[in-house]
Length: 224
Ligand SMILES: [Zn+2]
Ligand SMILES: [Zn+2]
Image (cartoon, rainbow, N blue to C red):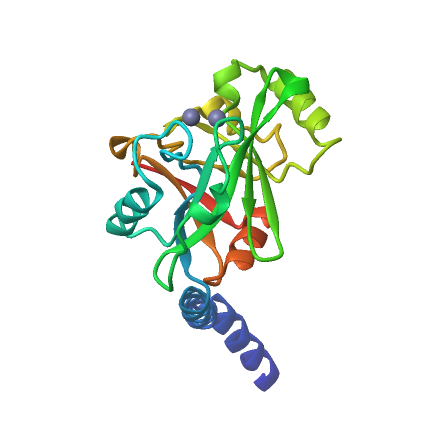
């Protein structure tokens, strides 16, 4: 009799919502605080990895472009003037950043074996990031794009794919068929081309940390 009553009470308890509900509350509270902790430790940093200046075919001086992105409250930018237009001392003329705005020095390479396909090369402290730029400019199909990435990768590593064309999103290339992380950039040549497309990188604030996070795909696209 006593045993049967106990058994019934256990069954009633199992049917009641107290236990699962308590678990749900515990789990969500834990998950929220974990997310907050992670957010506090590793913020999302906003940046643009494709900028042209008057050191190649851009309209403004590097310092002027830097100030535009500073006013837009970006966390990092990269200067990437065209390799066939720059003159020495290009690298020395690129300004440094500071603790608010990290600056990467970079260059946009032309790859002659592939109809002068553009490749972004971004220098960190130790890390270097190579970006396959604007496939839309060449109207590449997905199979063509895969083939071209594989061809370039024989000469240099390709770490990510630009899925914008001068700041305009080209969703066709934001495809799971391409296994590389996807990035968005302004490819800005003038002041009114700034602030249209960016990436948000889950990373500590440092040049190499940002490039490593992009290589791992710890970033998302942002569009105005
Ligand atoms: Zn250009
Ligand atoms: Zn280009």
